[in-house]
Image 1 (cartoon, rainbow, N blue to C red):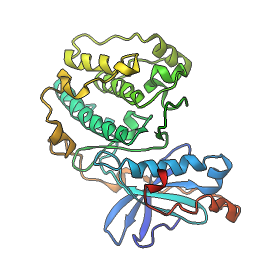
Image 2: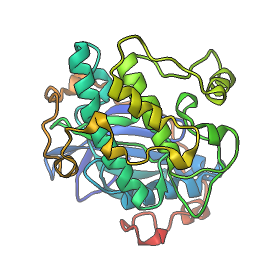
Image 3: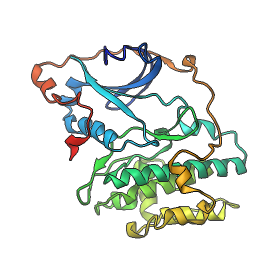
Length: 316
């Protein structure tokens, strides 16, 4: 696949494969830097009726642009694939860095990353977007040690309540499961689950099947380990409030964040707890060869006639 001729991109490794797309690492000879290229097979997207979902992911990435969200550089298309060319976040997944920390170091690190996630969610929500996929796999570390939220495949621009049940089971808020309609406060619930998991090693609601997880969430009971930080406990309790209107109220004023300079946080001026090691290409999987079916007719490509436009205006 040849994308972005002006960047002179050459794909060199596979970063990951998902249900509806694949992400490759590409080197730009022109810019002398790496990019992540997320690709969608046009024929498969059309056949699976996912045209609007793919378009929405691109549009919401553009609309959510901020220092804590992976930056979309441009979009492109050939006869086989759609491509989203994004900044390459060299540190990889946040969870890779938390295993060998002392309890004190872990608590401080999780607080720092939680602060940056709060900044990200506040920005995303200010655009009337619900993210719906907050989990460790979607939290990356930049080369400078700051959070980058990735993968907007489940994000949605809200016009009133939405009712779709989606996301990873352990992070889904009760109002989603109960089909009551929901808004951006489901992301604050997911943050509560995330903080608990990063500090404890497992989410507060779990089970051997999706239905068992959902039942645990519906019941709403969980326990904190002995010796759990009291201010972190209060914050998690606020985020896991079952009534959405009471959830995450005055989150920046919570005791766990008492020593946080939020203005510095929003401008990436806080000192990260760690700096990732320099990126090593040998740590990645070789470029995966796959058979891609060419778009069977021009009419399939016509669904994406405006794909290469890099403006968020189309979403309004």
